[in-house]
Length: 98
Image (cartoon, rainbow, N blue to C red; front, top):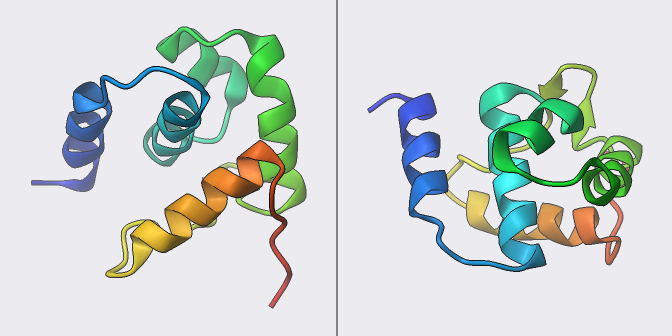
C-alpha cells in the first residue's frame, strides 16, 4: 500500500475527539496534503483560529519547512518522533537544531 493510502486509512480510523486527536490529524494531514493550515482546516473541519498558533509553532520549530514536512514519522522509531512533534505542536517542547 502506498504512503498516501496508508495515511488516509489511519486518519479515517482515528475516531477520537479532543485536541490531541485533532493535532494528530493536522500533523498526518500535513504529511499527505502539505503543511498549509488553512487548507487542512477546511479539509478536516478545524477552525483557523485553533490551527493558526499550532502551525506557527510547527514552523518556528522547523517541523514544517516551506512546503514540506521535516519529520521522520514513518521510520521504524517514528512513533516517538510523531509524539514529540505533537508536544511541539501543543507548545510543550521545542526542537533544537542539529
